[in-house]
Length: 100
Image (cartoon, rainbow, N blue to C red; front, side, top):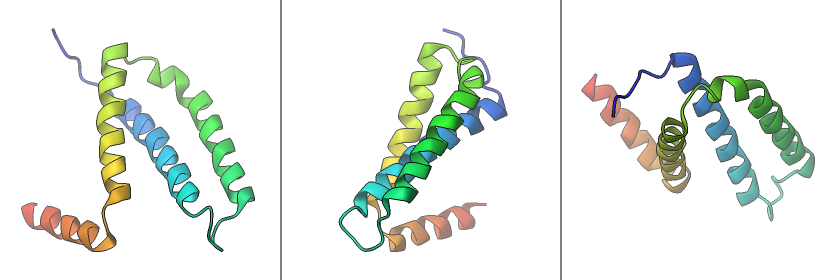
């Protein structure tokens, strides 16, 4: 099967939607703490919904398989980001910086 290059703006739109989902998940993690605010959670939900509607036509340029692969790989990466400690994140940044 031939794979076509996904335009940069479509990749960015996909990342933006997934990062919004990460933000919602992080807010959920704060639910039973003094840092949690329902109004912020609601604003984030509204923003996510508006972004999805606004970006829908760009995301629909991907065929179903590309869309599934893109979302799956980005979600795996975002879940990994949510699971690791800040120290591990810093270490990853140092390793990436050294590779460049």
